[in-house]
Image 1 (spheres, rainbow, N blue to C red):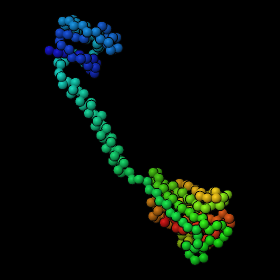
Image 2 (image 1 turned 45 degrees about the horizontal axis):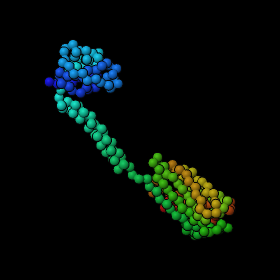
Image 3 (image 1 turned 90 degrees about the vertical axis):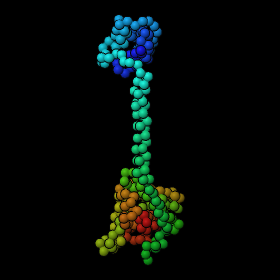
Image 4 (image 1 turned 30 degrees about the vertical axis):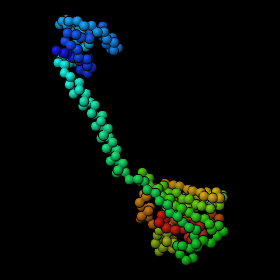
Length: 246
């Protein structure tokens, strides 16, 4: 017959023959993990002394249980499986989230110099070189907003280029009959590109979503001429003008 000693219901001592037991020299030695093997015949008194040294105030009324080679195996098996199950569940959840999360979108729109593309009599008339080009890049953001970046190529060094988004409007409702609101929409694009003699950029965060700006938002993208007084009604002063993000 074999016996197994239980300490505070959780710490298990190795199973030993009934006639032999790991006798602890003292309780402090037990806590330090040092043992002394003393083989001797067990008497009721010996057993009582050993149990009192191991746990003088046991929470479990039973100190001895029949030894069973499957006891520890059955006890540990669920504990070993739990981390595996948790890992599988977390991986599965993470995979599901990744599958549901669509990648952020972005798109770039290119604009040529204003040669009258939007209508007769609207071509640029001024002293700025006519090789300036522009691009408008929209980047979808995780917060539902959109990053708007304007890039100008062949800028003049030291010149400040006003770049605007003007909401489309009925000419019959605007003060000067323009097909857009003369006041630019700051929630979409109002900024300054600082010319450096080459390629220069300006970025801002629009409160409108990427889908709105690329599908339903109706407006004009404008680059004003920095070499003359800015006008929001005379299209011949626009270096670049075109439909916003189309």
